[in-house]
Length: 416
Image (tube, helix red, strand yellow):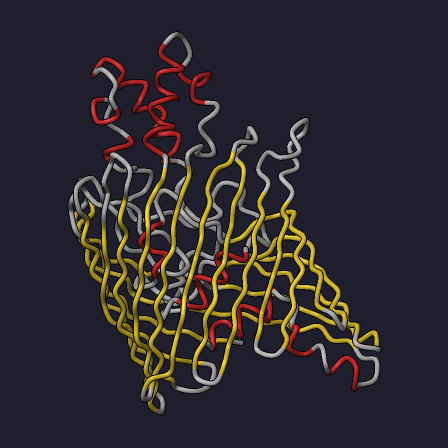
């Protein structure tokens, strides 16, 4: 549960320190913090063959941030967090996958989408537009893309406002034995198209921690003129941590840009301490009957073909799948070893099933600095063609449908 403590400290506004606000005199502080994570990342199965790169964010996305608090007394504390990503290989605030703007064949082949071959130029144009969006923060390039919020801790919980982690994501991070680190994390298996909303803007969140229970409720405003429900997100999480075990779940549901119910996730998970480590398992569902970002395709294509192409992409981008994870993390002295297996069952007509498995090793040079090695295998079945990435970047897609991919990574991580 170490990762849950770290994640919740930011997302829940340092609730664990709320009791201190009742016991200590008024004080305030501002802290500069961050993670510098980089190394050699090798991936096979891409269209250009095997690719070896210097990558930022192998175990965790590199970042820097400012967080502060002011003790108001009586159990109240004002807090804020501003957190920016940084790519150590380039110094920028965004990145693209090694496969570039390539999208899966099932989203770039007219006949696979149920359209006549004559529609291929239109499909290629739309696929190019979708592919141009693949990457991390490379469209908006927002400085504080990771987190930006302000809040108030009270004796009965915390209220935060701004860009924050979603409850569903926090639940999945809790019961992922990798705690979202590296290509072996469960979320890597569903990165293209996006199947989990990690963060959201314009969000109000209430959170409380008490007697082993951590609970959050979030409402994120879409802020679309003339349509109050468009792009809106609702989420909740409940986790109980007992003596040597934890159990809980999370839920996110959001609307697309025209106000239709879109990407929805449900997560259930549990962990138990066994021997020198912790066994974690998780089950999640992904449902999206009205994918976001496709409402403008008809206008982009134009003519009578526009509606047909938009409908074809809407169908191709629909999601209906289940995820399962099991993993074991063991720490002995300076050594931490994690083994994990993840699987996705795609219930749509695409049948893009896939699974991943592997091992991650961390050697702690100190409390703040460690060396890491990761070996992950992606098995793509049927129309699936996903490549492994890292915590801070997408892997993109493989050369063709059914092409498997292996990731080997070596890196160093420093926390400050």
